[in-house]
Length: 80
Image 1 (cartoon, rainbow, N blue to C red):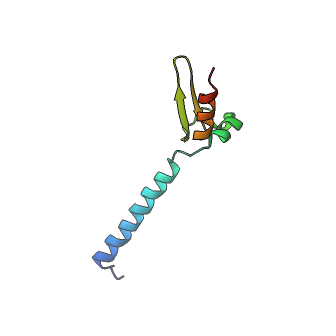
Image 2: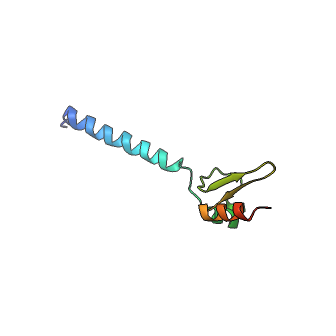
Image 3: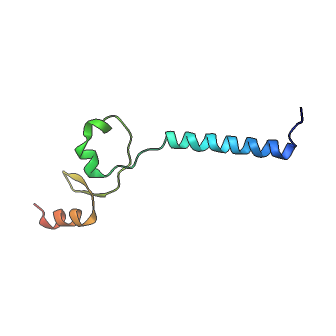
C-alpha cells in the first residue's frame, strides 16, 4: 500500500477541519428575522434567539422597535 505524500495529507486534513468548522457555524447561526415575521409567528420563535434589525425609539415611559425609519419618524412626529 502506497502512502500519500505529507503535503497531500496536510491538505486533506486542512480541508476536513475547515469544512467541519463551517458546518458548526452554520448550525449555530442565529437566524435573521423581519419584525413582521416575528410578530406574525410568535409561537415559532418563542424561547429562541433571533436577530432583528429596526429602529429603536424610547421615551420616559415607553420604548418601541419599528421596521423602518419612516415608521419610527411618523410615530415620533404624531406624538401624544
